[in-house]
Image 1: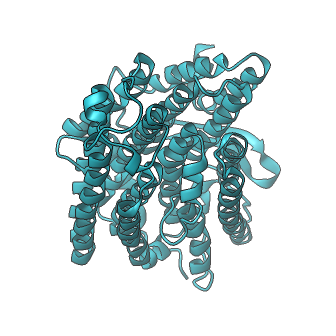
Image 2: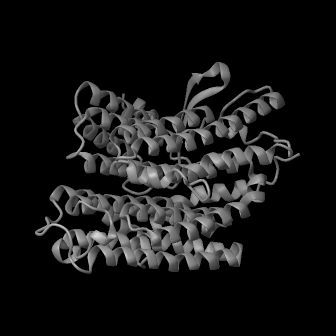
Image 3: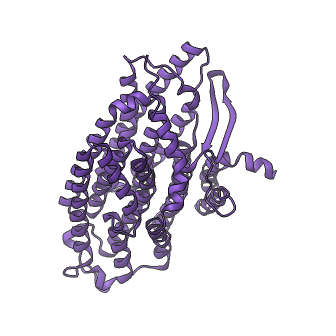
Length: 491
């Protein structure tokens, strides 16, 4: 039995949230807490002797599935996907915790866990049909959460998110089926296995179109400018738990898809389009930063700031050198932690002041010192203060961007200055100034502190001692560089 658990632990990790969702419906919402605790136990089993694993593949599973059409239940875990799995489980726990007092319906938690299954599947799947299935599963439950439990404009926000992402999903499916047919005709082996399809010889006439389909599908999920139209309404109207999952992990799934699917399938086309990706990233830094600066709604401000910071990750990915890639991969985790924490803090501020509008806020530092300290910490982390988590990844990305194209790095530096402007404006408006809102105002409760304290520990850990995590990511970075060095695939 123990041996079976060792060989199928990825399957358990993937399917346990789905079982937990069913348990929520049959029993009650407490099944969600038990599920997250069990998931944490499975994830901790990937430690080897109390240290981070260093091998290329930490775990790999391959099970029969739809063999008639060349689809298998194939899962793989390396350093990057392990980091994303940890991020998903941490934020899923925070999402459940921040919802506990307000949402008591078991169906709400069942939808969160079902979405968690899809997210984990995207980070683990090594079969494109399984990847596509998980891609859809991670979206639809969260759309339903917005539709059923969102704000006043929830129907419009949910519909816009659904239309944008389903349009991208159809393009992704078209690209996957084209590659499946091409490979089958060339070799006689019709397979959805990602590793197998990397050997497909894609005609030069259709390679840009296939890459475009995949790029749009993944960039919509990030999102980058100009395919970010769904983001402001969805982030603003969604329950806090859904917002932090959208920004914390679904956005990372888009970056992950570009690196793990689009790039290895079409490496030569990737290199041709890398400058376009860099420009989109730089546009996101500038445009997202400017929109963040002019916002008066605190939640929309954090949402647009998230777009700007994701732009840095896209630029590092497009730069394509080792230092930029290490920074981008590390920043996937860092951005998820800090942005999720800020959305939680926005919710806590609104609970106390009944408003998210900056003109209605102020003076929280004096009246709620614990809440003020947490807000300041995560704001400074987002700003990239040395010693905190965002700083390390941001410096690596900028160094790599300067190596690739000096002007990419220069625009990125301007984006850092813009980030300082909107972050300090946010801190000034919330923490200092004339006190507004109810008086007296309660400070953070123990449960609220328990949600944010682990994220604060991660902010300091990744900021002061990132070396173990950079080593964990060295294998994935090396693999990406090997794939980028492959100029073949275009006849």
